Length: 505
Image (cartoon, rainbow, N blue to C red; front, side, top):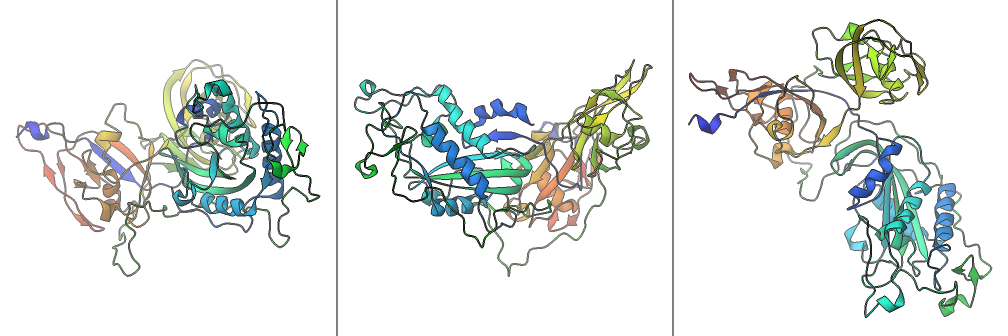
């Protein structure tokens, strides 16, 4: 039938790229998407972790976290009569370390969650102390209404006017008197479907756990008037405190280092989810024989001018090398940049990339009457008082997709032609999915993006990875071939049939 395929198939091209992502900051955790908005303005998405150092957290970070917890617990309002002084626990630290190295943006492991409380935090971009997240957890107090005794008949109501308050209530849960935290650098961490290239992941575990439904986090009253008998009447800074002559602060083992060594981002296979079968070592999994070396995203040098690079090519996504802050070429303009400007210099000036380099998108803006000079992010630009072609720079968004996702669903064809967000495919799409692949080199927009990338040799099934997609206009026919373990279908437009066709790289 003509109608059955009438909306088929604009074309897409898939090409090999390298790893990068957008920069963002969040205070944690599961079901906290609304709170994310409060911190995104400080800086603009379950894979295998990097190798770990011996120490889960540095001595200084541990002390900062512990001291801030106790300071915040001692100043709650209304005041607490039974708030206990919190101490560091090495076993909780180790359990937090184990979870931090999974680089999974969710609470876990599931078998421990009934025995511990847990708060999570992550950021990437500019450096921040771990207390940034601790304070963010406490700041949920603005949305929390403390339940007074007269309201607890028979259970205390849970009153939270914001998206979540459970990070605050765990932090100030009176009987949670032990804490252990860990920090890990996670490469390509999946946070609500967005890939963060280099996320700093904070996990804090608490014991005994808090947040019991129907209970208030602490008893209201004068400080230290309802402390457990085990404290012997001791009180310090409004907290129940046992002065047993022992150092209440954790001292790390001398043979271990506190330094978490950051590693250079490198190609890694994602950590498999439970539902994604992992091939056994003796399983004969076919690896790609064809690797596409073309790139939609162009690699440029620090002084490359857009005018010189954007001639008859795909000219709206570029990769800049590190070190361009001090070696970039001339930049003309602010917000709008003259076509004779350095691509990478404009990216740094606009705050899209930093001296570590990275990816950026370019949008041609036509002619502008003049260009103003300014100093931003270490780059001094030049002014120009005459009309010239202009461009703007923007961040490259990155999204995680499934094995079945198609371009028609995710990035439909529009004019003018633009890149879709950078995509990250999971591993094992060769084994996990039988979604259609139509074409060779160019593919139908009804084709599975990830399986087309495997067929084209852009990624390997055993590891997944990043790719670029560009929708292009209709084609008259598509060629079917067998490549890299996938047989693609052919299609040829018939007389009188107006459906679209596809091809893929």
